[in-house]
Image (cartoon, rainbow, N blue to C red; front, side, top):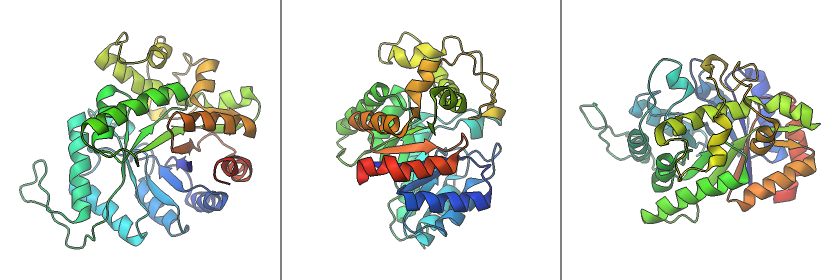
Length: 334
């Protein structure tokens, strides 16, 4: 089991440097950053900075999208970070949510996300690539054959299939084991149907962690199911609430959802949290004592998860990292 942490773009530079060093020492192997350049600061200067203060930790956006940057610029950025970090860069990729919709733009299609994955990976390897409306093919003379790992964020059937067909892993923003099992199976079936070897396919569960009484934990993390609900609402709109291909346990909790404020994306003061119930918070997050965390992560591991990535946005960040380093991570990797 791998362990990761995720920062939003408002973490101060000195604090980010401190926390990544603490996390690497505690046994975390990944650090991810939100990529929403309007809501928060640009994440890649912070990633480059943190790379210089760690030795083995891997970094990447969780998640970026095909519409945020010109494709050759995105490929050059990640290829450059790969070279200067000795290959410690991954990319989490989605259709585009907060970074796109906050500007009034539509997210990318699944087809665009798939093509972006293939073309960007090829550019970073050093291949000549044609894409979109670029009149001339692109080839980086400095590329050295780095194979960029791309994790695709997904919930709906088509995105999950795309993750299995072209991704190196899938990012599942949820901590509910049975839903994780269902999501993962969709990826595996699609990947095998495409003729891929899925034995090294990675599955990330990205969700908040918090220690303390359940009331304290729920109050600190209730923003998360609202953020997930925003994505699920897209699925319901596209496929219908009664679609037999989508578990009702995923869709039923958003029945009373009234909206979503992107200016408060992923924050506990988002005004649209009143539809979130205690059982949903408990199901979607990792809460309670260290033993509770271990038990929950073991159930995620049995469901196919290979990395638990903590959305480290609730306060008590040093304590959470320390508790994981002392009590939780050794239960899996000790």
